[in-house]
Length: 598
Image (cartoon, rainbow, N blue to C red):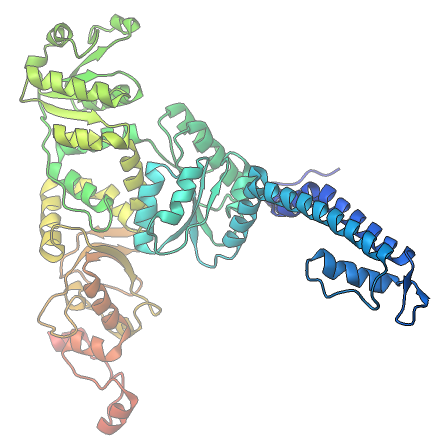
């Protein structure tokens, strides 16, 4: 038997999952037939016996002659009698024998109906039936989607934060989670559109297919659970069944990250590794770090405070798990000395590790905390981290304090502690994924921005504050082509088209729109933070940040000929067909070269 080739394997996998999904979609019908089989047999038997008895028992017609009821009349009579309608005795009044039989049939029917109704109510309360019904409703809702959506496996704190961010952008998404409470919360959350949610195990490929993995409008898969093995299973299933889809997965294990990379090219977000990179950036370029955090935080985020970690001196690290090891390596890579406090006695082989409980004064003294400049509380217990911070500040009030927050419930306590740098793994993952998926050019901007220096980042922040205020406004991408900017085609082809001219206000061209260009992409070459003298060309992609009204005004400039003529050249051109005929001027006059207007 011939083996399928590599191109056929994904199709075969999707075919089998669709078959399994069809079987699961029919599960409510099979459950009804299975659970209601006995009650229906009882009702049919009672009904058949009652009808047969009426046909066998002799009666009398109006003339007093013997008469037997036919099957049709008996069936009709039992139908309206069993349903409590009761039209009367037909076609002739019954004899005592017939009435006696009818009374027995009525009581038998009541028993049968009581048994059937009780079984039906029990079925409606059955967990398996309700799950099957929810699955059928969910699959139908997903199948009706006709716009791109993201598949979120895991709706914990990270999933909820991303859900609100995507909803603000108008992007649809579908949720899978093992917690029924989290899925039920989708109906309570104030989303602009209905969010389909399914209680299920994301490791099961059938569950992923039911959630729309094989849907033609599925635009990506996000593995956001707090179980690395589950995220690995989701990454593997998406790579095998839909290799063309982008996959983003979270993990805190380098080994799991390596195994994920074996399946296609997923984007893996390790919050511990990302936090270390962020802290290194904050040490070298605090303004660049401030700009990156602001742009990653999403629509409406307030400009964060610019923290300045000490670049020289010794740090003390409490907690030497995965996070502690990652951060210790990053700090030492920046040339900083790090002393580690760890409970495990096996760690005592390293002379830089102090064994003991960090909250004890003797252990803090052995670590020379009073001579340190930075302190990190990095255990996986929030109560322990808070107590470590309090003990450290009692010894050295001038410490720069960084900490790890593990549970969202403790956020007010860490806020009251006024920690200088706080790691919330769920927020790090959410902001990272948002930056990659919200606007296509934002992720490239964030990757290349640190290389331009801290002074450059400070200037960009100043421009954003001038045009957007203290809260981040909308980010959007514009492509200068015939589809998105038809009114600019001849202007771009003429040469000399500058970014400053494009950002003039449609109502007063001497005013500037409240929009800041962050990046111009031409082919594969990107220009970050372009100034007003930047010359544009057809096909350029521009990333803007600014007010919503500025976006609408820029859209008018790009699509309406009369608006573009005024904004670019100061000419008033009739916009309607009637005024064009009255003034006898063409709608799109020949555009002279840029030299004429200089």
